[in-house]
Amino acid sequence: MEAIMFFILALMSVGGALGVLISKNPYRAAMWMVLSFFGIAGLFVMLHAQFNAMLQIIVYAGAIAVMIMLVMMVMDRRTIEGLKRFNPQPIWPALIGVALLADLGFIAYKFKIDLSNAGKNLTLNGSNTQMIGEVLFKHYLLPFEVTAIILLVALIGAVVLTKKDIN
Image (cartoon, rainbow, N blue to C red; front, side, top):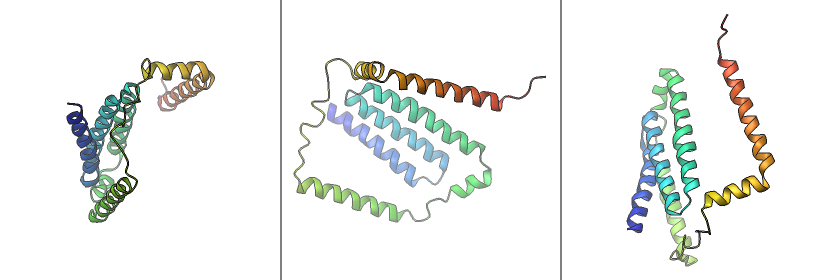
């Protein structure tokens, strides 16, 4: 069952990435990108890295994809029409991708890379979220708090800059 889920999630990730490359419509390319991000998050869950999976969904599938969609909505319509033809020669990236895949296969065959134990030793005592929290709050508390303050100041600055005068 685990192998079937892996292949489904891997197909979702790679299919989404191929959809980004092949799609001529930038809005559809952004949606394919979101599908790829969800597939990658699923692979993180299979590796027992739930924290990374949630970051993948919240930061990439949520924030980055929404930001890309908002930028495209703000752009001039003529610019977006010009973006629909952004890949006039799709054969060259496909050939480069096939060559890189063949190269990786050759390297794996030449060095006899054993994948039978891949991911077996990744589980630790306790959850990885707990381990990340302990390291973050024990050893890196000051940089964490400084980063939080900088982000808060940036958020307040963005609100103040975009707010209209109420008089």
